[in-house]
Image 1 (cartoon, rainbow, N blue to C red):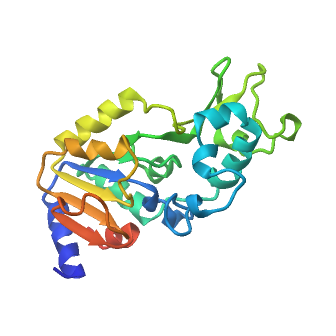
Image 2: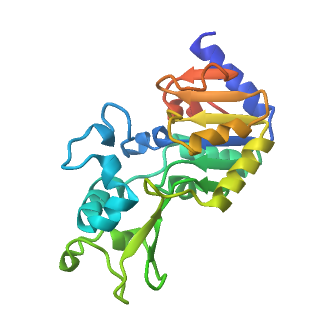
Length: 245
């Protein structure tokens, strides 16, 4: 099956479904200028005093908050990023009643910025930040400030430290989010996996709850689910979605 035939088959899946669920990863946002974590140009291949996986751990956050937030502001917050074709197409399908949910491993909030309403953010969001002492909410604009007077660590007016509502290494996923994502995936007619290597667990394990026969994988590199997928498209997800109705 050539590339165009694959696109045509995906169109048939989409046009015939009223219960699509999308499961996405970092590759969905790379077209918005946000680097992924495991590609050649991703964060994991950049050189720092500590490996990014260590910096983005709960232990490191506790022990070296100044270094954590220096990295966080430099590499995780992307204030300039805007939704791309993939985000916009998913929001369109939801508006049309075709797509029931987006399940994302991303923390950038671009799905909501594009207009998606039913979004399960498995790893949290940089848009939500809370004081660990009093619970006061702070937006991402506040977190992006230099906070020079506190060595780069954002502090609340009450004196507590402000933590991004993102899931760090060593932290568990939110159970309500998992439950919602599992229910959506299990009930889906078409499940589209896009822009993810499917190597991060437990998030990648949620795919196991899909019971349909229209499993689509769209990714630039092979994934662990290619063999069991009903349709595999090697390509950039924004370009693929731009060819869809």
